[in-house]
Amino acid sequence: MADLEVIVKKAKNLPALPQVTTKLLEVFDDSKSQAKDVGKIIEGDQSLASQILKQVNSPFYGFSGRISSLKHAVVIMGFNAVKNLAMGFSIAKMSRNGTVAVLDMEKFWEHSLGVGVGARSIGKEIEYPCPEELLAAGLLHDIGKIILSDSFPEEYRKVLEKAEESAEEIYQSEKKVFGTSHAEVGEWFTRENRFPPVLRACVKNHHAPSEQSSGESVKAVKTIYVADQLCRVEGIGWSDKNKNHEKMEDVCKEIGLTDEAREKVIENLRSEVDDAKEFFGIDKNK
Image (tube, one colour):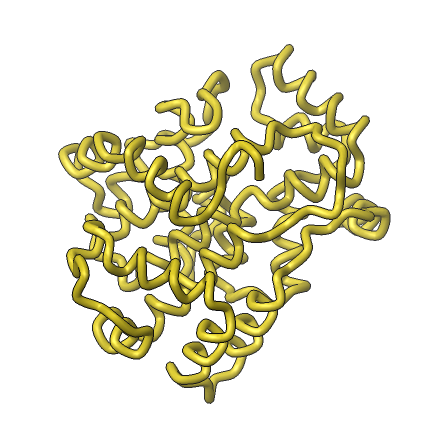
C-alpha cells in the first residue's frame, strides 16, 4: 500500500470528471434519490439526453423509435438502467489533463468500449439485473492506465517496453516499475470520487476475478474479466499477446455463460463497438 500512496500523492494528471458525472455520483450516493433526480441532471445536458434516447431506441434494446422522453425511458427500462447508461456516457466523455500521448488513446477507448458493450451483452445473456451497470464498469475498468501514463510518462514507456519484451501482462510490468498496478490506482481513483461499490470492484479486480470471492460484485467482476479477455482475443483495441493466469472458460461457467451464448457475443462484438463509437462520440480524434 505504501507504493500506491506514493504514486497517488505524486500523480499530477488525474482524469477530469465532467460536471454531469459529479452530479450523478452525488445522486447515486444518496439513498433517498429518485428517478426524477437523475432525470433533472440528464435533462441539464442536452447532448447527454439526446444520446441516451438515441441509445434506448437502438435495436439493442428493441424499442426502436418508441421512447420519446427520458421519463418514458425510466418507466420502460427502470431507474437503475437509465442512471447507469447516463454514467456510461459521462465516463466516455471523461477528458484528460495530460498532453503526453504514451498510450494509443484510440486503441485505449476502443478497448474500453469493447469491454463495456461486451459485458453488457454478456449481462443480457446471463440475465444480469442491470446490464448498463456492466457497460459503465467496462468503460471505467482501465482508468488507472490513464493516471499512470499521464502522470509518469517516462516510467510508463518502460512499462510498455517491459511488457512487450517479456510477453507479460501490463499490470505485472507496472508492479515492477511502480510497485502498484493500474487496477489498484484505478480503484483508488474511483473510491476517492465515490463511484458505486460495484464499479470500484470491477476496476480493482478485472485481472483477478477470483479475488472477488464474495458480495454482490462477484458476478459483475467476473463478467468484466470475460469481456476483457474476449476483446483481447478478438483484437478490440489491441490483441492478446500475453498469457492469462485464470482460465476464461472456467469463469464463463461460473457466471452461467454458455459456449453458444459466448459465440453470439463474439459474433456481434465488432459491430456493436463500431455503433458504440458513434453513440459515445469516441473516435480517433478524441
